[in-house]
Length: 340
Image (cartoon, rainbow, N blue to C red; front, side, top):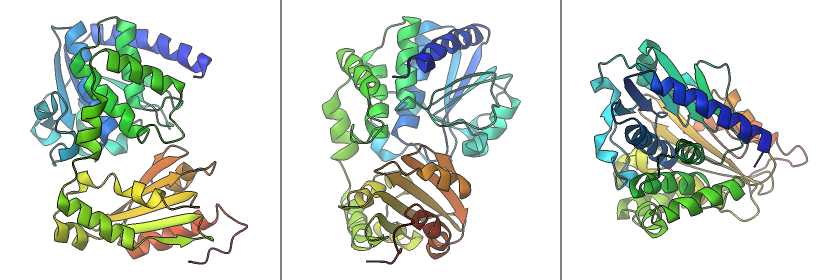
């Protein structure tokens, strides 16, 4: 843990507490296409606020018209999310969780703009601040780590329901504690959450051991297409909109496909592309070494961490690959970049 970074977080926790003290209505929203960290951290933060400030009105918003991804519907409170299109209020406080770039709020950005105050709880590198209070700490493994520490800071007690949401957040964003961001702090938080009533077995069962047969068929197609470049140091695969229709797999269930590509022996950087509605392609990047994939994601209009990043571009899979592959090959100037 970066101690100066963490001490600064504690000071901002106090600012956030003062801000929540001063408002009556709170809306909490994560990024578009929410993952386990976004869903779990948002649900837990809402419960933290309700427990410490029972008089506050708190709403969890979904930035997209899609439902909560099936994988995360087991989390306590997941059925209480409100689609942003159905939310007509002007919240006193809008809290962005697991993002610090307003464009990733999609339609929810309009709600944020009409809120009286804005706060952020995030672990991604941030750009120009747009918030009044921001707990933005890229050194944290997940937003769930920050929310866990905020609950402890308040002393409100972590319920089993909060703990389950937060453990899911940390487990998924560390890749089951296999990614480079799985540090001592994340393990300490996970230990505290298990002590508070979280079930690692249930998280593992629901998130990683309950795939529909149709998803496994899609995964088989994705694996069959894996190609390597730069003498095996870059691994790539894709899924088209036709694939998603054929196998009847919604976008919200595709998060784990990048990990199939990441598993290629000898690869150092992984790329997975999937076509999404509106003539666009969403890209996921992972680094297994010191190479910074977030810089490439930013060049493609996205962002993220050094080892895990993403982007969305106009066009189809072939066009996206033509744009991003030369950048990835450029990470390995000593290689020829030929497919193997």
